[in-house]
Length: 367
Image (cartoon, rainbow, N blue to C red):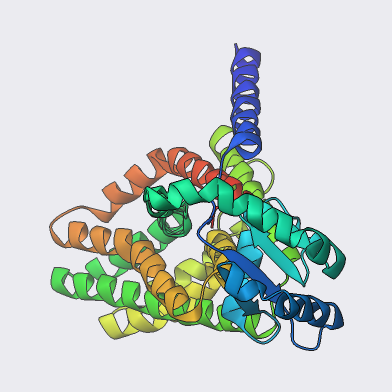
């Protein structure tokens, strides 16, 4: 009987990975066909030859060309990387000068000079009917961009992490021992606020470091594979919980963690403990966060990235707020811990599926 159950578990994993593989291979990505893009870099000699060619042939006036410099303009560099990735150009092959004409990509001065006019004329013929009938505008409205969905999915995977639940339940139990339910509620909310502040600024700091350092496409690919690995590890914890590497706080850290949490006997103490606990929880909760930060640093501008980080961390602390309110309304922390233990493997399953989906989305360039 045990062998049959083991076989079923293994078949489920193989089936799920196969589905992900087919998704990667067959998914169609909507692309921007409304204009022609010319990407160049300041000081690039090959780019200068292409620019001279465009000027001699008056191509900027003959065709709807958007000319973008990518060496010193991060916004343009993000657009460049996204457009070429969507069209199947691997990171290591991306360079300037480059031209994007519909689904066609020309890289290098000779391919552009030899083929631009014929490819641009062909593109105009193919798209003229769509532009006249307004179909292009419709396709733009449906352009696939899963950044928001990916951020929400990762934050949910992080929010349902058993570690965070366990920490809050221990905290509420310690403060309820004083007999003050209102103080316990304030402590729970203070703890959640502290976690939000610390995680937000840690995330913002890492985002800025990646941005200033000029994150490479290789790191972006690593982030996608990291999401897949984390997903498989969470699935492992669903099928074989406690065996091998555990996606939770290391066992040797747990006694120290409990003593730190129990030392908080007031809302102010809970707020301070939140900062310390956020560091201890990093091995347990940082996986999805690092994936998202790597994705945002490569694909998103700073203003939008900050908004995504705020959203991510609000979702992350939302279960903490719910548990605090539930305990204040009469839920016994011991009962909450019992529920957590019963749902432990299910939480790992949900987190695993979400992380696998994120990996597929990132590696396909849908964000």
